[in-house]
Image 1 (tube, rainbow, N blue to C red):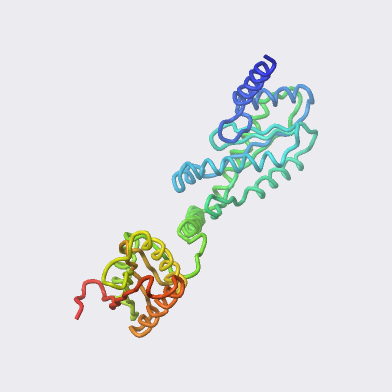
Image 2 (image 1 turned 120 degrees about the vertical axis):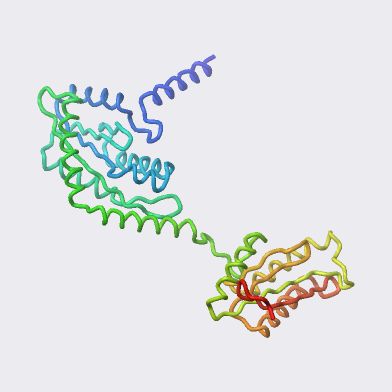
Length: 327
C-alpha cells in the first residue's frame, strides 16, 4: 500500500514537472517562467532580466533540418542552465527565444557584461557528426525597478533585444552571412562523408557499391594517365569444383582477411560469389598485379595449412576507359 502511494506521488510530481517545462529543452515554459519571475520580483524587489534570440534560426532549420535545429536549441538551453545559480530562472519563451532572470541588485554594467558572456559562450556549437556551426545571438536586458512585473520588465528587455537585432543586421552583410553558412555546410558534409574509423588494408565493399566505384574509375580513365586492374580470385577444391559448404565459408573468411591485409588502403574488393572475390588494384602494372595475387595465395595456403585444403585460381585484366572498346 505504501509503495503504491509512493508511486502515485512520484508520478504526480513527474507530471507537474512536465506541465511547467518545455518538452525539448527541459527549461521553464513561458507561463511557468512568468510565474517564477513574478514571485522572485515580489520577494526580492530587484533583479536583472536578459532575453536572447537566435539570429536567422529559420535558416538553420531549412539548411540543416529540424533535428539539427532542435539540437541547437537544446545545446543553448544546456549552456544557459550551466551559467546561472540555483535561484535564477531560465525559460524558453518562444521558438528561438530564451529568458534569463537573476534576482540580484546589479547595474547596467553587470547586465552588459552578462550579455557578452552569453554571446561568447554560444559563438560556436558542435553538431552531431563532429561538425561545428557558428551561432549569432541578439540579446537585450533590463534592470528591475519599483513596481515592475514580469511583463513590464519583459517589454523593456524586448525593446533592447530589437535594437541589438537591427545592429547585428547592419554589421553583417548578406554575402558574409552566406559565405559563413556555406563554410559550415562544407564542414558538416565532410564530417558526414569521411570514413570515421579507418580499417588498415584494402577497402571492402558490397557488390553494388563496388560496381559504382568501378564505373567511376572507368570514367576517370578517360582523362587520367593511370592504370587499374581487376583481379578475380576463385576458391576451388583442386578438382575443378567448389569446396564443400562446411569448409567453404571458413576458407572464404580466411581469404577475405588475407586479401585485405595484402593490399593497400586505396585498393577495393568485394565478394562476387560464394567462392569468388573481385579486387580492383590501381596504379600498378600487370606484373605487379600477378605478384600481389601470388602473395595472397601464399598467405592463404599458409593460413589454412596447405594447398590440399583448397586451391585458388586467379585471373586479371586491365580496366579500360568508359565508352572505349577493349582491343
